[in-house]
Image (tube, rainbow, N blue to C red; front, side, top):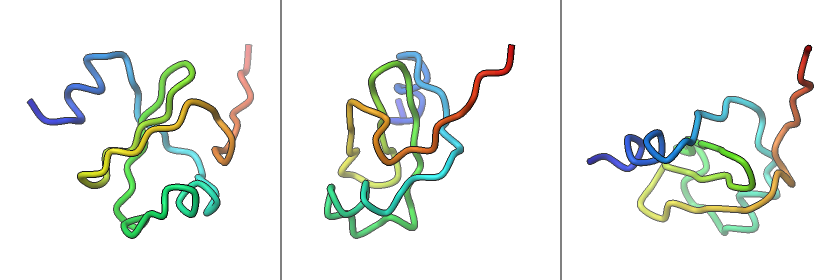
Length: 68
């Protein structure tokens, strides 16, 4: 099973917002151009390279307003 398929099965959805460069600096990311982020409550997971970085909070990720 591909890692992205696993993430979807675990309830993650594709994150399409802006990610601040500080997130990549924190992970000392050499592949930021390949980043593909997924998220679910309290977890942001990158599937862009073999490192599969994960962070528990939304700091550095663009917030979305929920329209209701």
